[in-house]
Amino acid sequence: MIRCLFLLALMACGPQLGHADTIQDGRNACRNFLDNSATNDIALISAGRCTGMLDGVVTLMVYNCALAPAANIPKAEAPYTTGASIQAFLNWADNHPERWGDSFSEGVIAAMIETFPCRN
Image (cartoon, rainbow, N blue to C red; front, side, top):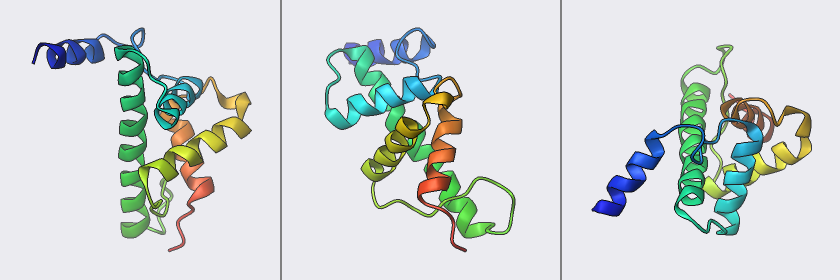
């Protein structure tokens, strides 16, 4: 219980403690997640933010694709797994180092649109 409270407090502390603000931060966090190389609590929180960001953004984009295919909003087809969406983001980020300073969420959106375009 104490460990859970500590982790919640760490998550609330902001960017200096494992928060993935930029595409580069998100890339590092997602790489740690896929490689299972998080070695401390802050790295684990960062890896959790990777999966949380990707799952949240992708879910909204899939709903946008299904419910409003003609709308000019970010949308994508559903990837098969969270791992597939993480790998798609990493591939996209590796191919766009000029955007590493942009926000993590913008990178996720761009990667999903490019990799899993809405076909409706």
